[in-house]
Image (cartoon, rainbow, N blue to C red):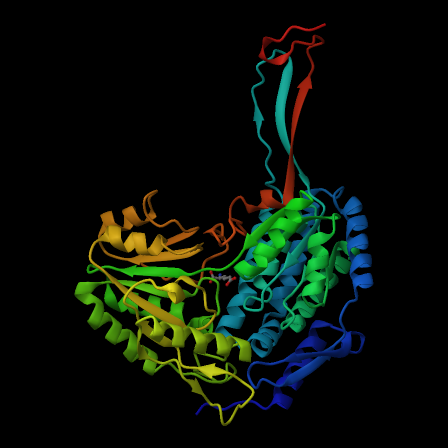
Length: 508
Ligand code: UN1
């Protein structure tokens, strides 16, 4: 059995990390309980924001926008650059908080902080590249151009599983775009949010920009709802479940605000007969069992050719049986806890439904360490063979369950990949170039991410991230997503001294 820290150990690590980062512990203390999924016990009590507080915060962010939008974008980039430097300096401290709150293993927690650092680099470069196009006017003595301006207040609503990186994707670009940001982190991950925000506050002080350009709102769903309803919020960028997206989208649409949605995934990988099976095995196990199955990009469906299915699934099961499960603070552990009792209940319900629907559990699925850690929920990642893509396979269950389906022809495999409501990530393992090209072509995967010989998770920030269908259609990070945080204006400038009308129209 791997060693577990005591709750007191976790609490003291957390307090130390928060202190070093510069979060004023006395100022934030209150009654809302923050638990660590490592032991399931309370590590901190925090104060929350009232509706009145949130109203004031939105007002201050809206006022700060009027100053911030006038600061030249490359100068705005200096704030993000300094923030990135502070994230480098405090990478270990932030990782400690992420492990304590989310239960991510050290390597993945450090990776999450690196993802923040990477996106600050991207945003600093972008601050000199908020390009508008100029194009020929049809009229002599006229210039036609497009200009990009900041939007206003951006609300970022983030999920527990990437408590800081997804916020940083949004915030680094929103800040260089000239927006101000109000962040509503997941209720279960407020400490890493306070720390990330404290480093941004320090960067703002050092660079000499308005403190009110970023805020954290600590609240339950009601705080999120308030941000979504408030007409002063120009863009709501939200990551979470499809259910949450269905609540947010119509409310923002009714006031003609903008949304950027990154919702559920139900990601598949196709393994073809020509695949390098050693490579595919590693890719599949990381994508399916990594982060205890709690990424939007987690591999949930394996679509494997009938000719290799028994052998390949056997190898996955062998690898699963040796995966070290335990405290994410312990050396060598690869699978940490689920976030909560509710997550465990959902995992158990999904497995029961899978069996009901004709599935056969090949390995895993059970709870472990229940005696040592009665309030924490550690589970063995499960592999379940399914007769077809039944109801439960069509749903995203945020836990390490890998459903296996088989196929005969590539057409059939692609059809299975696409036959779910979600459209975030997908992959094919093949050494046949035609198969790979077909998968990434227009008649291949219908997802926002389509990979070849690599799993569904672990995307780099340089490429746009997001998905189609019920995943919500938003794109964050990467190439062109900066445009989502800006508004486009078209300028026709007449220096001809005449007034020729477009389309040859004659008037006065
Ligand atoms: C998420 O789970 O919401 O591609 C984000 C990945 C990570 C981001 C996941 N870079 O798995």
